[in-house]
Length: 354
Image (cartoon, rainbow, N blue to C red):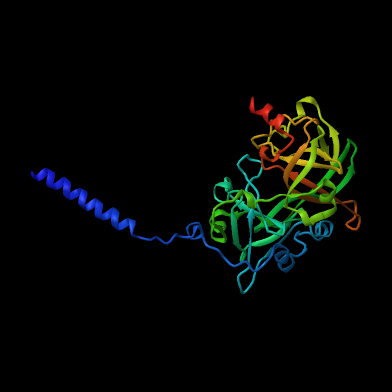
């Protein structure tokens, strides 16, 4: 036997030994959780967190505006000698651009909260169906237009007209206006490096965990603030082809029958009315979403609409701070076209052709 054949035979012998030894080895599987992050012990539920740390403290630097807007905008430091940890499942997705720099998480009991983070593309870090634990110590819990969210401290500086008098001279009537700058505290966006330390993803994303509770529009209205940030599914719902003007439905022109016409850089969301057999509510869409220019489904498309419930509370003061009217609006946010479900098949087929 020549040396070449001896070397080849020796190589096969070594390989056979290795494979036979591997066959006899028993491996202990590594739990997926150990590969995908740390699991913390949640010691607070979302309602308990809100009750323990959120107040209605006035946040305006001007007493007059604090009285007029008490409880609308707040920011309270989450401070405790021990860990303050909540957990939930990510129910939001910013893939289609209608959700921007925040995510929502929901507990098994359906309670939900918004987490404001100064980063886009959050679904690449905390995807839909991802289980997360949040260590809240050092973050802020507050209200934005009475909608609770976790963030950091932000000072919103706004200029308000505080005095207006009319002076007369021999030439013309003249308005003399005084502008005063005041500020308010509110929850701002958490810097991404801080968020990555506070928010721990655990395990693999599981879409089945991001469950939407079936509710009628009337039930959403009746629930008040308890459904804020909750993922819901409304059945037998349809678009009416109407928009909103100060909270009231208005007819739209033909070129406005899309989700969100351009606001020429202003950037505020556009409202479109939907109905079910129990009532009506508005869906709010950003002009920067991928589906902003999509034609609205016709009223003949009736089916399941899934959305995140929002809440906007605006207190409009009259001449004196003691004369205040409160206007409360529920509104919905679609995560994307995937939220138009059963009953909208023909609509999806139509937009897929374009």
